Length: 357
Image 1 (cartoon, rainbow, N blue to C red):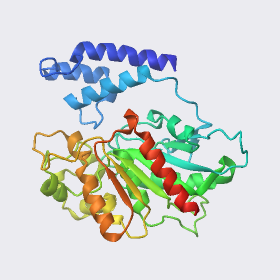
Image 2 (cartoon, rainbow, N blue to C red):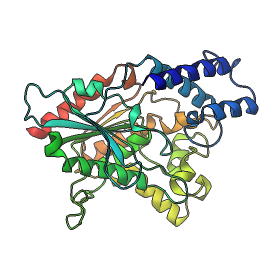
Image 3 (cartoon, helix red, strand yellow):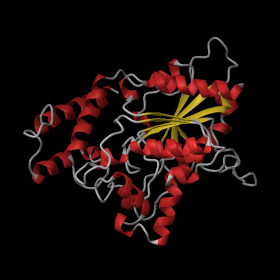
Image 4 (cartoon, helix red, strand yellow):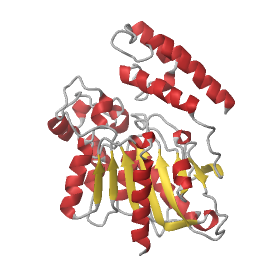
């Protein structure tokens, strides 16, 4: 941990000296050469893996390094790097809350999926402490990244569903209540939470794999900054923004946005779009967005980050959930990483209480 923190501090110092303390218009890297040097030093800053560092990516990376420097040591998992499948990224961390009062307790569980555009990120970025303090067990899981060729969507989403199925096989050993499982995640992780929550049960009762026989259904979902509809035509017509939508799009679906109407590409897009799976028997959702629900339609100059995380996605999903009668709360302008996790925790606990009644 010390080495990781030292490395983060060093990166922060270099990055601040390169791009300035506030990343104002006067102190942004003003040449492609400067940005390429930064990219070589800090490849993780290129979150959408398009080979170019945007102002937003530079600012986000500096913020991330600052947060890592100031955070206390990470809480060590009760069980670390547990394999839930055969791929090297099929691993998860599990934390159990204190069970001193009742060693036979069955704990509610939060499963969290990291963000990163389905091309980056890691389970270690999630801090389980607020949820552990609230008496919940926690899982943070990795999943396969898309590459535009061999691994396309919905592969990572099926990985996420398998995480749910896997932890159910561990319910007795890990003291998990299989009827009180909530999903959350940020950005790409929010898409996973929504998709798993709305998708029909993926259990295969006749499978030789005991994990595959378990249910993938959950009690509730609390996605953060999640795009709920991934269809380019809908996004362009309703929200505006840059024509290419996001740098991860070709890696997700194997084609550029301009080719999104090709039958195989469109099939993948529709399968990945969470709202397409929504039915009246789905679990309640808490939709949380850092940004306010304003500024639509966005100009073409808007960043992909602003577009893909915009609260308008939540407005559209809530309207559909209200229409078919699935409980939904929508909270734009709310950032859990700045102390608002109580909203998420209280809402999840309320859903769990309803489940047991």
